[in-house]
Image (tube, rainbow, N blue to C red; front, top):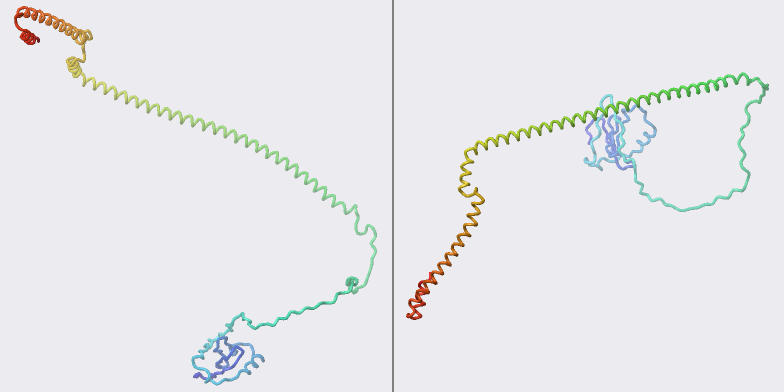
Amino acid sequence: TCQKKHTTLIYFISQKGIECCLQVQSVFYFVGFYFFFTPAQSNEPSTPEFTRQTSTWKKVPASRFSEEQIQPGTPEPVEGREHAYVQTELYLEEISDLVIEVDEECQTDEFLDRPPTPLFIPAKTGKDVETQIEEGELFDFDIEVKPILEVLIGKTVEQALLEVMEEEELAQLWSHQRAFAELRNAEFAELQRLEEQDRRIREEKERRRLEHLEKLRKQKETAEKIAARAFAQRYLADLIPSVFNNLHDSGFFYDPVERAIETEFLPWLMSEVEETLQRKILGRTMLDLFSVVSLIVPLGTEKLILCTATRMP
């Protein structure tokens, strides 16, 4: 099925199954599902293991595989490049074989009591030599103690000077702090005084403004009242006499004595006069009745009563 020149189709059986390989100019392309190998482009020489592996390939007739199972191979690399090996297999493989497990046990013999193992002392490789050092050859106290004393005394004096300087610096800092506190307190008191003065000025200004507004309001109200009064006086100058005349005619303005005579004395007088007149009229009527009776004695009683009834007012 291969039309390319110098191309042979080789089928081999490996541990993964049946695979096919295309050999084109010493380049092997594995058409299976696993990998491809290109020894022709590699600079490494072929190893005996690879030669042995390729020699174990078994040729299989091409009729056993259909064209659908043969996939196209990887194209040749361009000049100056080479194909690289790519791992396409699974990294982890599930082991499904059951391992036979058997429980066993053993007991070691107890060690007998024995003394501890002595320390390892290596054998001497050199020669032992010795020398004699007399007193005062390596260390002279009077000479060696001078730098130590100089360091101790110098360090002590330096520390004392540092402490004195620190005390002086602290005293200066405290004096500056006290001066700053006094200045700050004085400035704060002056600030409070100025704020209080400003507050009083603002309050006085507001009070004066309110007083001025109240004064203007009162002046306006007074002017309005004066104008209204003048207008009322001008308007009522001609109206008051006629009103008084009408009220006087209507009886709103009267003399108390005259009103008392008209409302109390005259009604009493009229009632007394009327009562007196009624008595006089009654006396005259009775007199007339007796005179008539004396004149008409011969008449009957009925005529007398009738006449009396007709004469009564």
